[in-house]
Image (cartoon, rainbow, N blue to C red; front, top):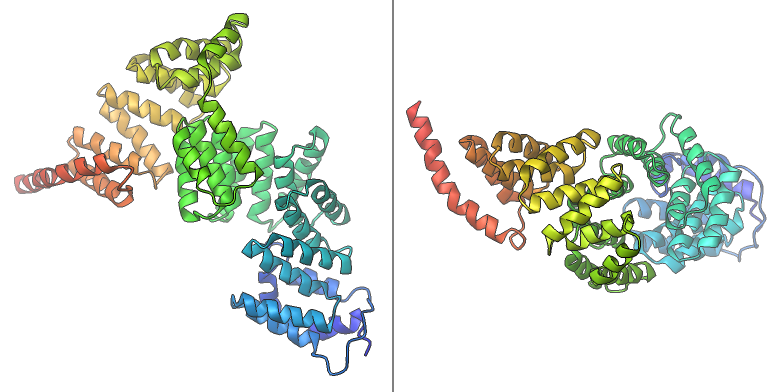
Length: 490
């Protein structure tokens, strides 16, 4: 029996009217790609397939049953039904594509690549399958082929929404040069002028803006992405990258910790968390996270080696380099970072010199200010961080250092304003609530102190904050008596 592509398409359309919504669920690369787009493409060109054996199962019925199982999350059953449909109809790109999405979800990358390849082979202009193949090729380290496939998909259809996140990932992993990056950026800007564009495209735009140095625009794009979809993982990742690019290491660590806690098995989140910790100076914890990954890939091994090497920086070698080039800002910055914890007094000179030579670099300014805080020069630290705050009002590292300087100098009302901002912008920050509670306590604002102590206890990890938890538990009974006494006095 000969089944033309057109015959099969019309049969699919007739029998799938009630399942079009389910079909759209499996277009995994973008909520923008809908069942309507695929259905329109179903009825195009006729394609001859091998003549099936007598009494073979109906591939249309099997495909639709697979879709139902897929929608219910019965993935094993769906895979079996897609396989049976492919036996009955060997060149069935839609079935191959759906198998690819399941394999991709499960992390079966070789199988996903094979399925997406088949889908593209059977339907050579199908940009949705090309996007799936390109994304998997990136994961499998076949970057040249991935670039070719994804750029072809966009050439065929400039509105192929699923191809853009994958191509953005590739360009971030391997910068292509200014011309290609600008071309991608122009396309993303154009797409974001259209209606109903998914949050992932705004996140891609923000990522490219970060790479080309437009940090303010990047933040705006990511804010738009997360407003459209607060659970958008891509947007959350880029939010952390922007914090790192702006030397907001404290803020990046807090956001990365929350993201990693939500999905602790995601290697990408683990890598990002480790990077943030290392840049914030906690190399021991960063190394522990990476070494705990069971099957590290090349990216993880390279990052681990780089963190270990940076932890073994030879101060004498850096100082020798500085004698040859006394105004080398990169060397001054490295000495500032390397010595700030162990020898803050010695670090201060390097931090200040780096800051004076490159005042536009927020990282050097923060390093200088942090060294001042460590040396308890709170007046100068406050003046510096207030100036920096005008330039980067959303930088958590700046606000946290400023709060610390105010707190330790006894300016509790000013410290309260900073800690309040931190807890509002990072509501999962246990440390923020701890210091805000103590600040209220010192201001004799006992009701607010009690509320923030309790919020700290709800959020705090027993191992990380063991000493602070003990102090709070000792304080609460006394605080409750003060509250009761206040009520009786009214």
